[in-house]
Image 1 (cartoon, helix red, strand yellow):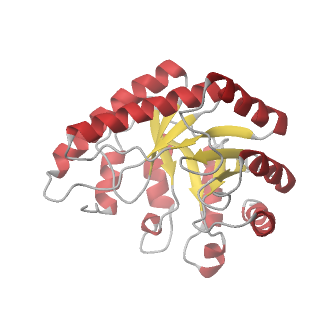
Image 2 (cartoon, rainbow, N blue to C red; image 1 turned 90 degrees about the horizontal axis):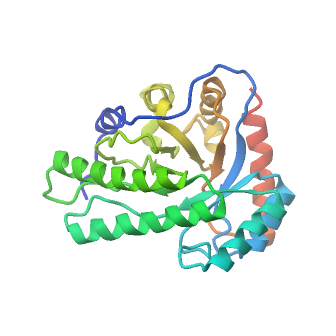
Length: 279
């Protein structure tokens, strides 16, 4: 795969339509959520919801392939059970983290990913969630980037139409490589807190201001990077406050934990998050 530069990423992102309206507000309206990649990857759904309630985590994005089992294969009755479990817990079902991607030079692979994305759209609709995360990972070796971007954009338009019909959204994860902007109002971005977000002054503001109109969700990782000076989370959270973002910043950490260790980790994480979002 051929990676794209940050400049190329920002340039192509700028044509996405839709997004959240900007509204300056000194108070944080957003809440802390959890992606099941990867802290609770081995926990079942009741355990995830129980721990989130204990810690004070407000929402969960269910990443595909994990033990929670929230997948398109669920029957209608099983979907109703999952929806009830979330409702009874007081934890919001935010959406599904799929691994759908649309850059392949094999049309059959692209079509399969589109159809899988539509299956996740139907699942999220049935569970009362907000969106389906998809990802771009680069350009196939030897492929024309412009044609690949156009192909990805067209695939996202098709997925966006399905999402609009279902009353949900498609979130393209800012993942280091990108797509041709599709221009569909049901397609937005997941800010992914990558090192490539930073400019030469170690600020995320220029990248954030470019992408702000299309940010629909956010993944965050090691908050200690703020203290280390390697990722400015306090600045990022301030930018979210300034735009009036009222959704979730979701923990996405690469390490898995058992329940006891994971509960402690998440409690410590929540304390740090509270401090960094306090202004």
